[in-house]
Image (cartoon, rainbow, N blue to C red):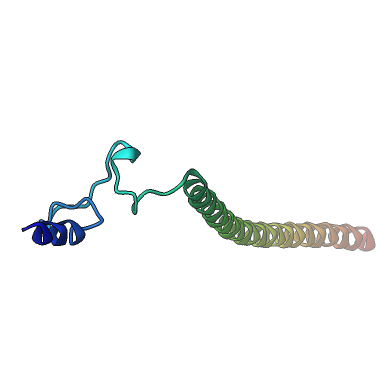
Length: 118
């Protein structure tokens, strides 16, 4: 009987699970209530925390870098469109100016013809 009870104690799971497959394992609220094999020292917990913090920081840097690339690309497109619009406006202005110049030349010719007849 005694040997039987020792087997039961040795075979107990090291996790705090009820044995029902649909239930998730739960951590005890108090660390001292944990099995000694499951306990981690303060240094180990802090190391895990530092690792997680470093990982989060790296992920954030990657996200920021990706966002910076997107904004740079977006700004590049906006600049290109702006330059194109300015070019179109300048061409329209130059066309208008040449049209005005043509009109002035035409009037000048008409004045010269009128003076030549007299």
